[in-house]
Length: 265
Image (cartoon, rainbow, N blue to C red; front, side, top):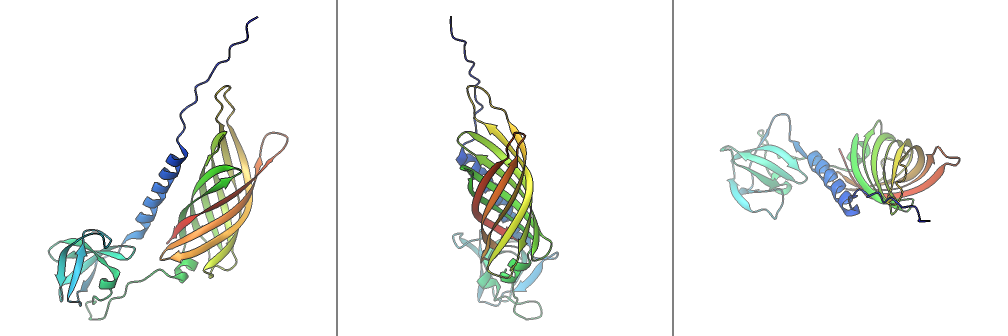
């Protein structure tokens, strides 16, 4: 008697781990750059060059060449800012980037020296919005997460998370909402506690017999640290303990740790 034939179900090609990490990092980088570039004001600010000259670069960095020089006594309009570089426009329409050190030596129309605001630890404490990317381990699988946060006050914030899970036997995604409490938000290294709920979707990588996809509700508790780095950037490290409320007899418990960086504004 011949053995029953086994049907091999072709597996759908899965994106590599590096592809997922690269894609997510690119998305967050675009968000950061978009948040870091902003108009100077609703109306352009005009400043006068007080140094012997003002060097205009082709891009926001010292590696970009100087293509034009504005002489002392001439005026420029401040169009936008990117970190420590300012896009300015001359009277004849030329646009270029000038570093903060030179811009702080320009004068306002009333003759007073112009001051440009810098992000500080106070801004870190009182920031309303935050977005970031973290990566780490989720029950033995790799996980990369993007999040956005809104602070209702310095102690309480509300977060939305989206995560991609990449394991040896299954892949998946997770979406959850968190409430975060910071007892000492004014500290440079600020500890926090978090509580949240959401959903997790798991897709097994079976090739012999197609496994069943699962979607389950989850809940978690956890804690971590937000660390003010510089300007509007911070580092973040956290641990979470999840309970997966499955439709089977027993629920599952999963531990997660992640580290990453974020931008506040």
